[in-house]
Structure formats: structure tokens, C-alpha cells
Amino acid sequence: MRHIFIVAFKYSVPVLLGYPVIGFAFGLIMSDAGYPIWLTAAMSVLMYTGAGQYIAVGLFAAGVSLWEAALVQLVLSARHIAYGLSMIKRMPFSGIRKVYCIFGLTDETFALLSSLPEDNGEILSISGIKNPIPAGSIGNFMFLVTLLNQSYWVAGSLIGAAAGSLLSYNIEGVSFALTALFIVLMLEQIIKIRKPGIFIVSAISAILCVVFLPSRFSLLAAIAFALAVNSILGRKRACNEN
Image (cartoon, rainbow, N blue to C red; front, side, top):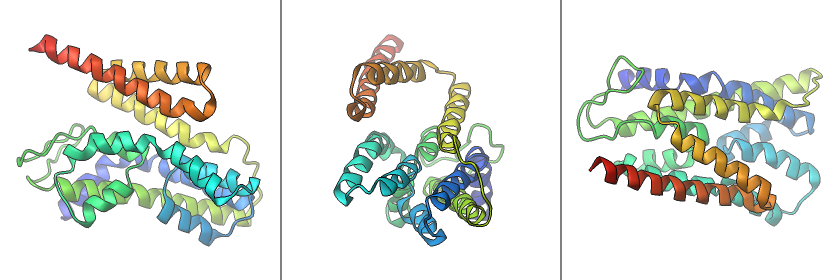
């Protein structure tokens, strides 16, 4: 288990370089809005939605109703349905580990876990990591990567909330930190798998939907359109290879 933890930690380093910073930014925003540190901790542990937490602060400040806030969060987090469906075959384990991996499947964690080789009961060699993990250990590995990623977020948000309660900051533009991290992870995945097509299609889909559709529909429409186009292209590529 110690060996798997070390490998999981090395694999999660890209998120370690970003999550404490954007978690810190979230803590600052919560503190600037006048919310206590315990609420920041509770949101990071129990809610843990990244962008959803940032938006929740604005919803709280605007005084929206619980149902309105829930609807906004549902629409914002609907992309995780696609994430979860694509990860079903990559989680050949059950129990509390799987439940937690589903709960902790943020954008950045999905970017890491989705690039793992499938577990076929053999020793897993992970791209960029020298030490492989033992056969049948994919469940523990995914669980630890997910847990480490959340710990980075929680630590950053608590430090940010504490700093915000003690010092005065100009937090204008701080909320862009989450978007910046996801862009960095996307570029890393493009370099690693060397198949930029799926990212290009997704970017074009997002731009078109933002430009031509109302904002409340653009996210879901972009996800659906990108999935459909990439699925078609993937099938054509598979047919050509056969």
C-alpha cells in the first residue's frame, strides 16, 4: 500500500501544483464574502465541486432560494454524468472506494484517471511514472489519487480562508484560477496522448454553443455536441483501422 501511495502521489503532482492555489483563491473569496472558516471547510469536504463552490458563493451573496441554487448546481455539474459513464469500465472494483471515487470525480481528477491504462489483471505501467503498480491494485490507486487531490483542495481552501480573515486582499480576478488549472491539465493531456482532435472538437463545440445558444443551455449543449461528434469520429477511425 505504501508503494501505491507513493506512485499515486507522483501521479497527482500536476493537481498538487494547482489545487492548493485555486483552493486558496476559494478560501479568500469565502472570507471576503464574510463566511466563517468552518463553512469553507465543510464545502470543500462535503460539496467539493470546484467551479460549483465558486458559483455557490455568488449565489449565497445574491440571496437566491435553495431550489434555485440547487438547479444552478445541477446544470453546472451535469457534465459529470458524461464523466461517470465514461469511467464505468475503468473502475472494476466496488465498495467504499468506488463510492468515494465517484464522489471525488472532479474535472482534474477525471483528466488524470481517464488517461490510466485499463486494469486487465496485469502489472500497470503508467505513462510518466517509472514504478508500475501491482496487478489488481487499480482500485486502491484510483482511491488514493482522488483522496490526495481532495486533500490538496481542502488544505488550500483552509489556508486561503485563514489568510483572508487575517489580511486584506484585492481578490479581483482570483476566480479565474480554476479555469487556468483546467487549461494546463488539458494541454498536458494533449501532449501526453498526442491526439489533439478530441480537444479541438470540444473547443469548437464550446465556442459555437456559447455564441449561438442562451447561457443556461450552452454548457449542456456543448458537452452533448462534443460527445456526439467525437463518438462519430472515433467509430470512423476504428472502422478505418479494421
